[in-house]
Amino acid sequence: QVQLIESGGGSVQAGDSLRLSCTASGRSFNTYAMAWFRQAPGKERDFVAAIRWTAVSAIYTDAVKGRFTFWREDSKNTVYLQMNHLEPEDTAVYYCAADLPPYGAGILRSDYDFWGRGTQVTVSS
Image 1 (cartoon, rainbow, N blue to C red):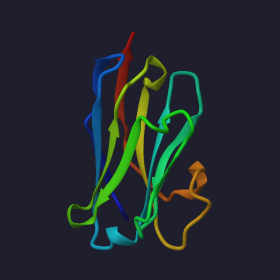
Image 2: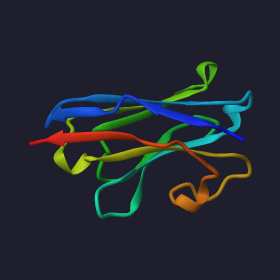
Image 3: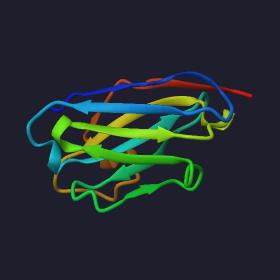
């Protein structure tokens, strides 16, 4: 089974930046589709961003487009989420997810087979 470990969360002020990372176990990381989801208090765990194994491009939810950047470094079995211009609405636990081949739709929780334990991001106004 694939194990995922997130890191990089913390408490920041609005307008600040954070970089999250997620490292996966296994030798076949370059075949995984990877994603970030987030869960705010009292809300559903929602899609944030995803990237296919081909790494042609990442996709983002509208709420973070232009502010967040998602990329992968396959040699390190790691993906990153650079979060700029953070807003209080970004406060959530951020989860890394992996989808092994064959791939699903890519934006639903059910599309992903493996999950990290999450890292807390708190943004104060």
